[in-house]
Image (tube, rainbow, N blue to C red; front, side):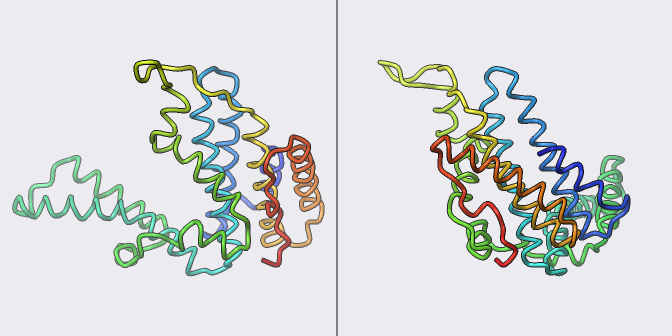
Length: 256
């Protein structure tokens, strides 16, 4: 899977416009987190971390798939501006603190923070005004995105269940840190995670996204599409053989 992503990225030139930068950036993010999962499997007590990373892989894959599905320049723009709202909010707070002190006395750290945010916004190809007027999110809810793309609820479960490992809620604590004792609770051995059960759905989904990406960005590259579909079919066959829940809609047919 990692080699396949590397091959996809090498098809692009060294410089991209902003939309392609977003697409490649999401592929690089998926690749990095998949590599991290593979590294963590060699150590004990890393199941929770792998669970959390699997959620980030799935989110990045679905974000990329939705952007390809919508093919809307405005959505790419909002993807950028909505993400910068926190940075501009920080800039506004720093400037307000300076104004409250008379407007002339800037501390060195404030100068650095202002310069950093302004450079970040400029390098992102947008303006402070566009960021301030941007919505908080760049698209509909995750569930609505899945519904628009016509994929099944299995994606939602693969996204939502590992979210417990990201947020550290009771489900994650009980699964990986504590357990029942006669008089209450105590420290416990973490649940073991089957690596194929964790990775197979991620690989199947990512392969489907690579097919979408290849058809949108590199139309006519049948070799890339065949490679992604072959890997996906192999993983899906393994899942079916294991009796686990199968992502029936992991592969895009390009008509969703």
